[in-house]
Image (cartoon, rainbow, N blue to C red; front, side):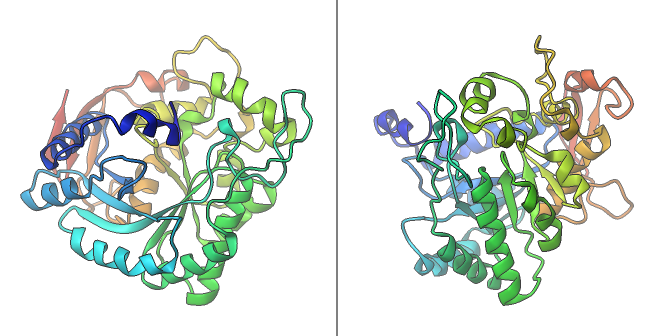
Length: 362
């Protein structure tokens, strides 16, 4: 079961307690530190599809010192409502932010996913015979309303975290950022578009022009069954070639940010860097390279997971090795920048430090 269908069984699971949620957060933190992750953005704070809201766990851990990572929380935008919820988001930002946890982002789901034809596209999906259908996916928030909402959130110094997977959703999100810049000027709120599976070539230069950050999940940019069986046949050859355009984004001047979308897929940054560089899954026997012109060099891929991730979360004193910066450091068992690119995913994290404090040792 995927997406909303999980509610068919999740409603039968006993509700979690605050102690459960705190234990789950600390277990997740231990795992993420073991993978060399010193901080993250949690894109799902608030009640959604019966899932437990981890906000209370973050607030508790931030106050009692058990939160060793630096975390930005993205407050969920209820697409059944409008601007009236913004006052509630402001109150939540004030209530939850403490120490290493800041609830300064708002997550807007603008579309769905390509595999079930809900990602919003500028042209219709194809059917099994290669003919155009009447379905171009879903824009969950009316594009005109989206522009107004984002301008309001920007004026209040919220960062907007868009789920934008199809090329129409990407365009609608960029239009909303453009509207915010026109209304408020450039406020430096680092709005970012996550996933970017299909980006129309016309929209590539708009990221740099608008200061919108490209938040990519490199692990997905490879040949595997969901791509080969559930996506490419229904996008067609032209649109399939617009998928995960990491190289084109970099060449257009966009700032690249890298993440995982965990728990949807593995949180391991080394696996993600491996795919960004090789455009093949680690350990696969499949020799095909997925859109090789979109490969990144190892240095650029690593920067997206370090300086890029720090930048999107507002930590300009992290993500790079400089005197005076935060000592958020990861020690690997090899140099992934000079070793064989096909062995990047085999690297292991030896030690992880946050603010100079050892939080993981292998």
